[in-house]
Image (cartoon, rainbow, N blue to C red; front, top):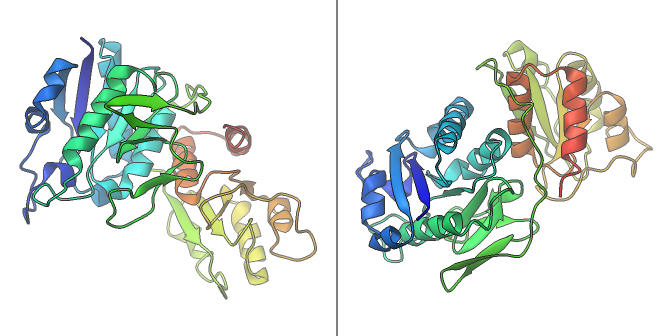
Length: 326
């Protein structure tokens, strides 16, 4: 029987009613699903009990180290439960940092346990079934919700309340069928062993461009201590012309990643050339294309690269290579 370890980080799956404190730990979650004992030997760790909105990148970096240690001791797979607000960020960090081939699944609950139709138990059971099956072995972290399997590279929370809140632009890579996980797409897995975290403080700003934005906040980015910027530009990578020079100035000082606020599709690189603020003008000013990564995942990647002491040119090359993953 496979050995599975569950790390709990709080969230709706571990709360009841109006309580502001977690009253269900990992052991409670497992005891609420007696059928788990027939498919896996499960152990648990209450890693951190916090609202997902209060989690930090440093928290998940520490979690990644504990997961690696647990895997190296012989665990066959890992499930992480937490609040849903930041699951996509947690999943992507673990995908980047846990350079092991064992299954890693992140899940949680959209509906409070006291409500009819609470989804937490079903999500946890499906997550454990995915880990036990081994179908996601070697493809990085995945998110399991609503009987669907999503790659950490593509998944996003797209709704405030729906149990089907987690979606991917390319669709789920698999799903549950009669309690059996099915994988229908296999994302390419690439080694991320170059990540060696050497510092804790590497703040990266995320800035979304909107209609009529004059960029007056941009000069404050460096003044307030940010070491990098991810710009969620309009469309395929466009900004108002008034923002071009401030962005040029920033790109001389810190890495500036050019992503799209649309959340899907790949950044343009050569389609629009005739005006200031086009993607070609910004790339010529030193901004770095995010490829198909959205703004939130670009911020995670840039933060981890900065925390690893990565040089500017290496950051540019890393984004260039990473954007080619499928």
